[in-house]
Image (cartoon, rainbow, N blue to C red; front, top):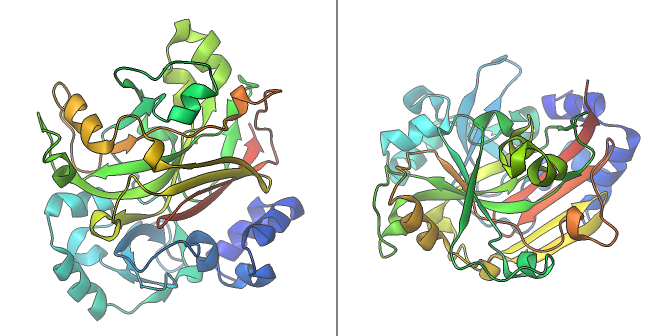
Length: 334
């Protein structure tokens, strides 16, 4: 039995198994035997996609790999670049060099590995609030004149279908699917004209939020409400920017227990990626591997009528066109 199969059996109830099966349109139960169809949905193009993973033979050792064009196999590039994506980005290796190295590796089936978050050790996770027009409208708030920035700790990061903890200290845990930008070069005082040169790639993120701690407690500061353990699922891969024609024209969706909650487009971004990078780097230096969460579209739980919040047993699906899908089960605090 594969690591993925074991994880499904041990971490999932029959309710989760049913949700997984129904989430893959037209695939039926065959997904259980081919999890790549889950991680890399039909919206995922042929791409240079980087993953971090573990194998049975390697134990807890983290490896860095690139996916085959169909997303079914992974080739290890850890020996030359180390086992983490941040180290690889810092190496400034060319994609041609990576392709040559991957071609020499013996590929392993994706359903025989455990996928981890594609970035596990960024120095910073920087977030932008109120950055979709629809998200402003659902709160009856005006379009902001300048972006609202906040941060999450790197300890929030979990993998593409790891569990999200429903922490006992909150009863208002909410979902927010987001496009995550991965920084590729040290960025200080960049201009909008060249800001995209500092981007390495993109991935899918969930900015899980404890609304009571974000809005009502901790003096109105976001940090605790946004930074509880497991509150930043990422994955399934970092797709290199060269394979994303326009990051501002991607569909972005989130469902809970198979019910669609968010359905938007990154075209709704109020402050685009180049604008965000220009503004931030006037005072904060961004480093290779830093993660920027760009905001969420309308449909979050807090602003639904009546309000809806996550509870143990819920399953969150988050998908962005061309980048893939992540699936995370909400579990009780231990």
